[in-house]
Amino acid sequence: MSAVRVVMLLAGKDLRIEARGRQTLGLVVVLGILIEVVLALGLGQASSGLRATAILWVTYLFGGVLCFEKTMAVERQHGAMAGLLLAPVDRGLIYLGKLCANLALLGALAAVVTPVGIVFFGFDLSAAPGAFAAVIGLSLVGYAAVGTLFSAVTSASRLQGGLLAMVVFPLSLPLVITSTQVLAGVMDRGEALDMSGLGVIAVFDVIFLTASWSVFELVVEP
Amino acid sequence: MGGTRRIAVAGYWVLSLAALAGAAWLAAYYAPVDADMGVIQKVFYFHLPAALCMFGACGLVFVAGVGYLWQREGWWDDLSHASARVAVLLSSVVLLTGMIWGKQAWGTWWTWSPRLTFSLVLWLLYVAYLVLRASIGSEQKRAVVCAVYGIVAFLDVPLVYLSTKLMPDIHPESIELERPMWVTLGAWMAAVTLLSAGLVAARYRVARLERAHEEWALRTGMGGPA
Image (cartoon, rainbow over all chains, first blue to last red):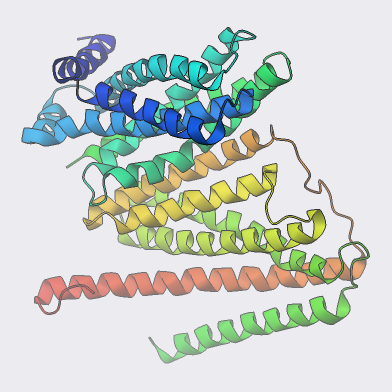
């Protein structure tokens, strides 16, 4: 079986579970909108690019943590993880499968909370929708890379939810800082997309995808 | 602990504290008072060495993580734990002294400048290490997870640095010091390095003793781990 097919099968399994139960997505989307409402009540129409990106990041970060947790939690029931580890496939591929499932969920979350944010806060993306999509899309890949790795770790620990956020948020801060600064330049100051900023995000993605893929086996071993 | 070892350890601490006292004397009486900043400028002698030693401690967490994953020996994990604690302590010192300096230089305790943000993120990264450590019960699992986290966190450091470079900056890019200031800075560098290394070694020793105690308790069935 080819590696791509294994990854598709594993991600498909998680997404099928989600499609049947619809537990995670409903939860994170509503949570994301709630966060935006609370922030909008305090900040009003905050239309600067810097604020827009930061506010959206709050929803992605919290929603993302819940997605990572849920996709890993299904493996903790009925010894599903043991079965998964017994499968005759490279364990790095199990990581990639989980990553794809998480990315799909994050993408769905972003597809809802981003337009809601635009309506609530009056963000103007018309200046550079392509730059916005590229920066946020690349950043979410890096965030999911770190989140997927550590969700495998923290699902077995005592603190669970709070702990995953505690571990993943600081690690993902370079993504938040870079994307807010780059998008502030594009949207507030009308500059061209800063390729060095995009480069930092791309390097983050490459480093953490490689590192997580190679150590995933170590953290899931029973 | 054997007699010779005890004397060596005591000697080390006496030397470290003497170095610290000497450095404090230099900062107080030898180094001139800065024309713009006044006396507050002197926290800088503690700030910069603490920052450099903090990077050393973070690097040690990384090395210990790689060592553990490679050899699976418990002492690597103890070293990683000890270094992470000292890294958090030193980065707290960096943040606090930086804030005192900033209050005098810029009139505000905190501003989102690149280096302040960088220090804060670094502090958060290694505090998260300690929280992660405390929350995993199984010894084996804890060691593996902390090793992985120590490696990943260290890989994150240059990325945090690059990302904060994109922010608007008010931090001094280079520093101009007179000769007595360099001497004082050198003395503080030596003192802080000695103290940091001593603290890592002391915490490492405590972790080794804790591990030995747990193993003894498991073997004899007497007294649970503390």
